[in-house]
Amino acid sequence: MYDVIVIGSGPGGYVAAIRCAQLGMKTALVEKYPTLGGTCLNVGCIPSKALLDSSEHYHNAEHTFKTHGINLSNLKVDLGQMVSRKNDVVKQNTDGIQFLMKKNKIDVHQGLGSFVNNTTVKVTKDDGSSSDIQGKNIIIATGSKPSTLPFIKLDKDRVITSTEALNLKEIPKHLVVIGGGVIGLELGSVYARLGAKVSVIEFMDSLIPTMDKTMGKELQKSLKKIGFEFYLKHKVTSVERKGKEVTVKADNAKGETVEVKGDYVLVSIGRRPYTEGLNVEAAGVKMTERGQVEVNDHLQTNVPNIYAIGDVVKGAMLAHKAEEEGVFVAETLAGQKPHINYNLIPGVVYTWPEVAAVGFTEEQLKEKGIKYKAGKFPFLASGRARASMDTDGLVKVLADAETDEILGVHMIGPRTADMIAEAVVAMEYRASAEDISRMSHAHPTYTEAFKEACLAATDNRALHI
Image (cartoon, rainbow, N blue to C red; front, top):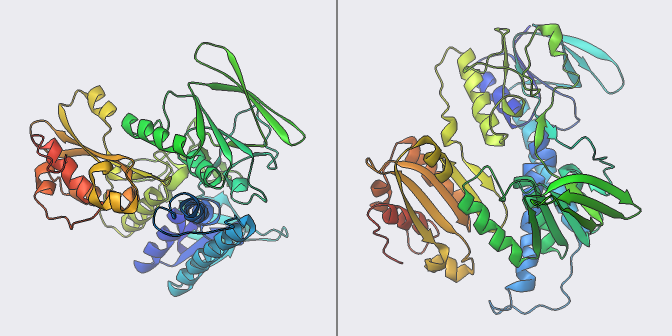
């Protein structure tokens, strides 16, 4: 009998297992795929960042090296090698998780985990053989899968999801991306930098619609420079493939039908919770209408010894959110009183420029009727950004009009994915914009833009604009 069985080995599951083991619990991890790490390590965060980095190197070699005084000739893309390097990065990471399981004495059971009852999990291997394991507590961490639309036939050859987009054998001539969110823009960026024409069709009136509107507008400007075209406020009505050509039809805001033809179509309209084969009914676990596992504020299901975390429950589908929840449940089981502030979990888009945000958007503050002041600082005015030729974007700080407490930070620019951590720390300690503006930031660095935006929010005191 295990103290804890974790079903799913993504960032939520494997982190939950490690923390449970650290706290002295006998722990088992069940994973249906041959490698650990879930979507994030195998077909999500890690491989996409590997391709984003490779394509950015190529793009810089083609477009900015000459200005830096570096002359190249016969520059070409070896997509096979790019994908091979990406696969190596994935293997290093998944092997690392395997090592961590051994180090923490966690039993890994390979096979599909399904409930027999609320304390028994059946593990079925690919060859059909199965065995039962028992656990006092069970954590569901089965993650998510790409969503699609009912009328779209994903052939995974020309009409693809993010999973197939990571392993293309050729650079598309014209990649049509359905969905202007994080995944579509990141993978669209990879191929745009390598020479593909990229068309994005988005139902909403801005890109990355869940983020502050300023970020979407700025990102659109930057992506246009590398050959993106955009169809905002367009509703896709059909996707049809004939041979090597795929035709996407969409209705614009006036109700007119627009046709976009490409050789590949990437469907990236979000992700859905994944519980197929889990057989939650046998354990009596309640699900929501949206297919999520229903949990309370302690991430506990209606069955007291069963918990759920990550993409399979409510909230943002982010690897680091799942990790926090994995630790939260482990510590709850150990009798501790952990806490997660969901408003302070940052969101990042790994395009170039990168987009990163934490806290409330300007639109949310207006909706809530909270009086605020905004401070902005453009990277065009940053000495460090000029030195690296990364002058697109800005930092926007939103602070309470009366107390000056920082309520939201929105960044688009170079290395903002890393810079946002300073804003998270500040907001965890309820810092004011003036607190940050009075801290010394090394010069020249990109993070000075955060300090300057805080100065701008504090009585419009920015020094360098």
